[in-house]
Amino acid sequence: MIQSAYTPPPEITRVRTLALAVGFLFSALFIFGWLIDRAQFFHAYLVGFIFWIGLTIGSLALLMLQHLTGGAWGLIIRRVLEAATRTLPLMLILFIPILVGLNHIYPWTNRAAMAQVPALKEKAAHYLNPAFFMTRAALYFAIWSLMALALNWLSLQQDRTADPKMRNRLQMISGPGLGLLILTITFAAIDWMMSLDPAWSSTIYGLIFVASWSLSALAFGILVMSWLSKREPMNAAVRTSHFHDWGNLLLTLVMLWTYFAFSQYLIIWSANLPEETTWYVARKHGGWGVIALAIVILQFAFPFMTLLSRAAKTSSQKLAWLAVLILVMRVVDVIWLVEPSFNREHFHLSWMDLVAPIAMGGLWIATFAWQLQKRALVPINDPQLEQALTAHAGH
Image (cartoon, rainbow, N blue to C red; front, side):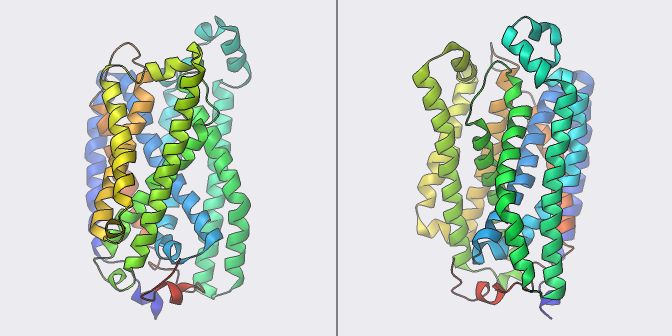
């Protein structure tokens, strides 16, 4: 049967065990950081959380995009995306320490300081307050969980029943769901990241996170598919054309992220308003300026030039290494977004900023691998499966 033919390889168990060991080891080291510098612990914790929640929610976005557009590119990677969305309960648990450390992370929790500025006082009274913050977070997780649950359940029902109506239902959910997802990501980015600087605002900030989280998810998906394509049974299913399609989509998301990020910079630079430029000033001085330049080169320029080459996009190895680079730079980008909010006068980078993403990553990857083992590696009763598995599968 095709279901048994696409059983996940046994090596995934070793990956899960190794990831769990790394997660526990670095979590112990991270907890030591909590003992010596509690404020820095929570700052670094936010870095790790934002990166890994980005992979989870970005995978949900790509999953709905695939259901809407169809094509072999998304059908072959669908199980990876679904498994990534099922890490959402873990991210909900990992969100709890952020609620515990609100006073260490967000300046708007200091009501005395906010009351000194009339505009900030209004924000604190009506929007930026702990009770409403937690209510909104609960709403985001509820919406994301319902969408992930619905998509995963319908996909499983399609495997079990081969009912062609399931594909239509997946599309019906994905249409409005994608719009709702973009809206919730925007508000989550404002709440969890932009409010680190409560006096600063940007109308395009949320879209930057829509693009960057989708970029992270696709890079991770490509890395996993490159690993699976070298092992049975996926070595007979994954084609060069699939990697070419993923490379094209990766190029699109790199350009989309760059467009949003540069648009924000250009608008603020041209307006030259002190209340807006201070955000970039804090991220251009000293070492932060060097990191900003590295982000421009290694998250845009180099991937952009590389992905213009068809040879790079059709090589699973080259695409995998590029995906690793993008994921590393996504962590660097999150650090660049978070840490200058707490160290405006000088460059400060803590070892905890690197330990936190690794600690959470071990737990996230172990959960992901566990979920990936639960189903066949391809949607076995999807009407497009036979076409997707052919040697010349199209878009």
